[in-house]
Amino acid sequence: MTRLRTDLGLIANHVARGARVLDVGCGDGTLLRALRDERGCRVHGMEIDPANVAECVGRGLSVIQGDADKDLAFYPDSAFDYAILSQTLQTTMRPDRVMEELLRIGRRAFVSFPNFAHWRVRMSLLWGGRMPVTRLLPVAWYETPNIHHLTVSDFRAFVAERGIRVEQAWFLTGDRLTSTSAANFRAEHAIFLLSR
Amino acid sequence: MATAAIIAASEVLELAEPLLLDCGQQLAGVRIAYEAYGTLSPARDNVVLIMHATTGDQHVASPHPITGKPGWWDRMVGPGKPIDTGRFYVLCANVLGGCMGSTGPGSLAPDGRPYAMRFPVITIRDMVRAQVALLGALGIDRLYCAVGGSMGGMQALSLAANWPHLPERVLAIAATATMPAQNIAFQEVGRQAVMADPNWQDGGYYGTGKAPDAGLAVARMAAHITYLSEASLTEKFGRRLQDRTSKTFGFDADFQVESYLRHQGTSFTGRFDANSYLYITRAMSYFDLAEEHGGLLADAFAECRARFCVISFDTDWLYPTEQSRRLVHALTAAGAPVSFVELSAPFGHDSFLLDVPALDRVVAGFLSQ
Image (tube, rainbow over all chains, first blue to last red; front, side):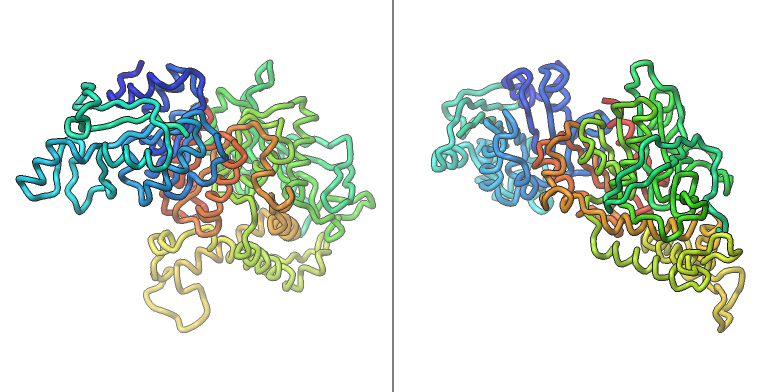
């Protein structure tokens, strides 16, 4: 398989072969290409940055320039086997509505996000008293696209409240998987596989 | 243009069957002029049908027989270009109602006189109907891709909606699925300019030695502005004066932009028939793919299995991105595999004809898979 970022590789390895997939916030299409070429998936993407979209279409991918907050509404119910929202949830205006849409148009959804309760973030806020700038959150508060920070515990509470089923979850520190216990403290980054 | 249709040096095919038009009339003896580039594969599976814009023609990648200028999409179509004639068999036909060899109002009716305003009012779908008949006559029953910009994009969409089995891919650039009121308004201005010219003679100017050139030139001037952007006009002309150092306090073309528009207007009358302009803009005004399919645009594409690519330009205010987005939402709702990108280019609506490297990449990429 194309050398994928660890989190994307994890997602790719858990998508069934030949599945219909929508990657929301697909960037330059790296994950989509891997899913198409290595797993025979029927792949679609949505991406907000026009240069990225042009890059994707130039590589033969079906990608729509669109906004997760507005443009998911136009897909029919269960249009995809998997809807993927990788490192994008925290950048949306209304993560709750995006999640609802994701689970409406996808039979399952992969959602990944940086964990704002990682110990490094906590330390930075506790001792420095400043908004954390870390490896996964490298941009200062005034220009970060991450406008809805959340933690692993926030997300677990959110899905529990809404009756969303967690089929599987993975927690990463750097490129390494970390244990589920104390994930809210130890994980830099979480990936959930969800269904209704 | 005072004579009947300009006959270009293209291939011309006469349809064996009359065309049944949307208005209910039948049109017999329809001739379709077309250009072909590249080689048809033995399996006949490499056909790219390019559909031209309002005042375009079939000379996509070969010199225009009247103006001698390079084909209108020379930069896009040719060996090794995004629409690669080394790989594809590229067809482009002059639309029904046109004046470059296909049957239009300047053609002779069965009574031996030009149709003029006796020509039936046609639609975008009628234009496509004629091209589908041409494909049939050429033994082509599937298209690798149907491609068009502006009115060409509308034809490509109409093809996908009404002959859903034909195209495997559909590429619509700077187009719309429904003609908005503002565009209908501009089209009406153009037609009124032609019809207000006394030389129009209720359309019967053929053979009189007088043609509504002044009216057609004004129509072209007005339309031409809508194809550009304020930024491109400012950049190209600003308030610069034409071959003079001060204003003349008269009504000459003092400004470069005036001189440019006058030139656009007069040179247009040398290559285009005024009645064709009326009929073609009328067809555009009538275009509403949603209305044709029970009011819901998504239903128009329910049967089509083609992959779609929709492209708009950020400075195009004639067919703004919102129109493309509406189309994309309908295609999405219909479950069609669709790509959509709004490209940044300074040239307004005309961007699809001009040097926009990102457009080349997207077109080549879409055709590659």
